[in-house]
Length: 203
Length: 203
Image (cartoon, rainbow over all chains, first blue to last red; front, side):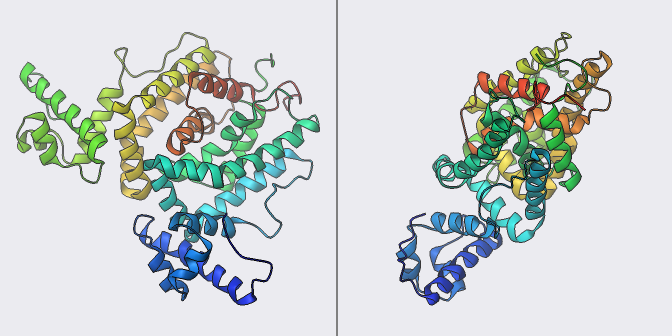
């Protein structure tokens, strides 16, 4: 995102940045995106508004960075690749299940989802800055499986990614059933082998 | 839903019922669920508030009935069964794509989705009265395919339904890509044959 930090940024400004991202994340969960404000974030983080505006152009940009920053594991952003596609996908989906079960993540992500649903411009921004890059990481993992001969070369990777990840999204947003590790595993298994496994030969 | 019409209901009260459902549907799209009111629906439908309360306990119940009523095709509510599972599922998903591309449906359904996302009680009501029965119809079609030997008997039907229908939901809510007939077809094909088709033998 459009942070304007320089290589000389002090440890103190890194601490401010983290305080701002944490405040944005917490407040989005508490008051919702509509009532989230730069003023509120600044007050919670103990910084001046200008400190925030120096790094981010809008509250949306702060929240995106907050979600990006707090979603990243220590190992960086690529999906795991142990050469066992099924195990790797299960690990990723289980981690998502755990994240969504955590109110620290559930509430701000739900606040963002609601705004995205009703605001096409925010949806476009989300697609460009957050979902798009995530989609690329997911496709990169599937592409590696294609190269390893574990998935067919003509697989539509966009559709494949949606098949694997959308069920969790739907179950989370609509609370239509328990969001568990067992569900994550079943989604991965069923997506990989297909509904028709064992019955009709692949064409 | 809890309508209290009797077999003797007149054509006039059927006309009122339809006017109320249409008004609820239109208003939900125009003002959103939060601002939807029994008063507003009554005014738009040209009936008294008591006429609405005679048939429905709340605005939520009216909107649910409106969505149920206007979503139903003339052929009733069962999914098509021509013995060609893939063709039937594509027809259903294409119809959903068409429905979501129609602002008459997109807007009230989006209003409802937003409320469901932030209101666990409404999510439970939706699951019980709308999504649950729809889920049963979808599972009934897959069960028929199991009986016809077209799907394995041990398939988890809840997971299977989510795999087929969630990608459309995600793409619609987040506007993450074009929601087209081609996409609907690709989702059905990929869900049925699985990501690994042709590559790894089914276990």
